[in-house]
Image (cartoon, rainbow, N blue to C red):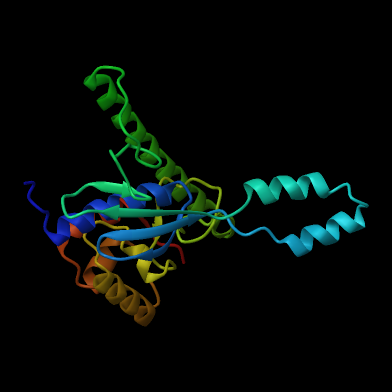
Length: 224
């Protein structure tokens, strides 16, 4: 019989999977210790498209149909069972470096897969650096692109950044080791002091464990 994992390891596995999805534009709708519900896209405004179609004498109808088919909200449920298996909509899968985890097919040798995983991780890091530079150069554009906002629908890929100063508490649990209780504490401290300017200030002000600092420094952004 397989041994079960302790709750902190299950939360860490779930947070890692959620962070991968969030970096692809999915947003957290609900999260517990072993399960998260995430959504992507949004509802089509049929009333607006009906008005446009009438104003254009039906010329807008094909566009409306395409949006109705492709623009609906998508939903995925990520679960970690007591043995550490990731389930996407109830189906067990193996983690992948980007996007929804998929079963690993027969293919290149293991060292090639490792090289691809390292390359993908470095690509995500480069995206985070470019997003930080974009935010530093134009804060208004950064807000419009929703840099660091995995909780909102967006198209800009920021590599998985999390804007600690503006995301809701549940999005803070995307950091490994940040429980819902700790996320609530960080949000309360943030609201009291008016925000943070760095990972070091966050850790000192919210009295976080030093082990949390490296990941927060890697994935956090602090927009004013």
